Length: 231
Image (cartoon, rainbow, N blue to C red; front, side):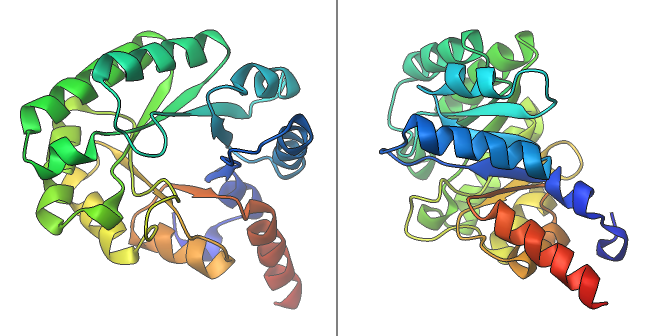
């Protein structure tokens, strides 16, 4: 949609409100869910263990609970990723963001990446759950990103996602644009990692992102409210 017509609620509905810290306590998770309700964010993005808690907090809302799987390294087997996803779905996850096997991708073991992606897409879609494939682009060259996105264009996860936020760098405009050019209209792109301001978010949307993963969602929405007041 044109940025000039983007409303506050439309932007909020593109934000996955994120808290993926190892030290997450119930007070942190409750605040995350309360902020998501207050701002009408699309999803809360959390690790898989607190899914049931957040699902309960967001009961009777349209805000999704998203579980990060094999996070943040991706270095678990296909079977382990599937088991973690099944457990998260059982506990109330509406979306799964899984980290693909980065080493296999860089080794050009593309049949493995395709099998992994197909397994995860089949599992999630059979349970009416969205699935996002995290590429962790900071460790990839352009050929790696194109290879992963070409597989995604074939297998059709709901999103390809730039980053975990735990790598050496996060989303870049260049990588978002490359991912979108490669997947076309078949798959959406989620930009995550290092997105802290309204301008960051708008730049990623302009480059082709249709979801924004950030722990700064409240600040971004407040900046948009302020910019509209100033106009």
